[in-house]
Length: 156
Length: 125
Image (cartoon, rainbow over all chains, first blue to last red; front, side, top):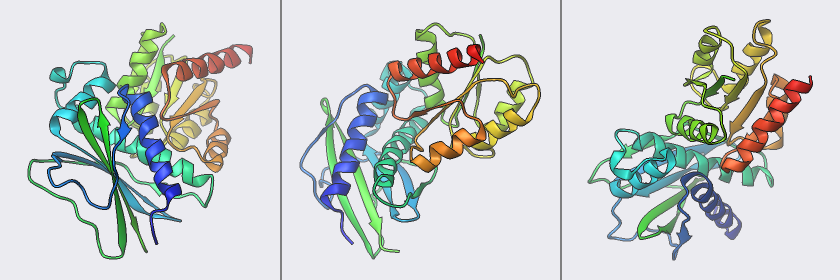
């Protein structure tokens, strides 16, 4: 099992489309790899899992500041006015990316299902994958801010 | 015309309502799932339903089936706005009684266009 160039193209396109259309802040892919940068400030992690023909997760990571910028843009308010809406907004971003990824896959293979989003907010945590899984990290820039998309596929 | 917006994400409801307001529809109701949507419909007349698919308690497809099974609400035009975009998904939603279908992510222009198509076809019916 591996994350092919085709899967990478699908997750990158899904991310670019979601941010351009629903967040209103375009994102640009940086150099990708299997591990997150050591200095990555992940304070918010929004995850949607998928299962069926393929099993895995899509996770959107960002700092709390960037998450508020995203939430404010989606809600049509200033980032400083965001008051408790950020987790729902980040969950919806994960839902949009995972949903578009699923749709692109469904054109080529049996359809998989996606779960409702879960959002983790904190200041000192890291995410790890289980054995039998492969992971790819896609760092994006959103203006001067950073957003990281994580794709994990599980061999089960 | 009052529009009922049904989505479990408050962010997505706000995006849709902001778009509706920009294109001239400022009378709306909100519901967080299909069950709440059914309750809102019993509270007064609604001219258009915009609903998500994947929601807790009652999904968008179950909600539309309930709307179509009720004599008081079966005529209300419905637009489904969802990430479910496989051909089988669209066929299932249309079979349940959805009038039109919009895939997330969407642009303000695309939802405006879909709303106009749904309302025009409802007027012609």
